[in-house]
Length: 104
Image 1: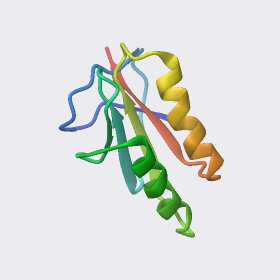
Image 2 (image 1 turned 120 degrees about the vertical axis):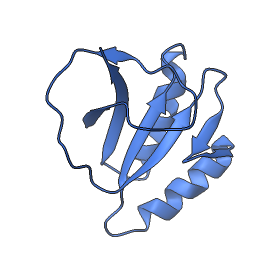
Image 3 (image 1 turned 180 degrees about the vertical axis):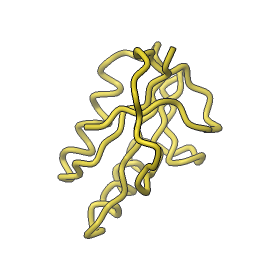
């Protein structure tokens, strides 16, 4: 699992904080999945239901070289909301997961 610092995104989430450390300069292809403070899910910038998210993950899982799934979750969410999405990813045997954080 990879953690990455905040990159330019348009979905408003207050990311969890981590201590500063060296990060890779280049990032593989990635697909952003966001969960805002209200628990709404986004595929990139597009709002999706949890069922639609599952369908999109099914499509990604068919790719022989799937992108990194970059999970951006608001720091105020319950842990379970994040784990539910991580579990959905793992059920599809997708292993390239990045948990985005904010570096202070």
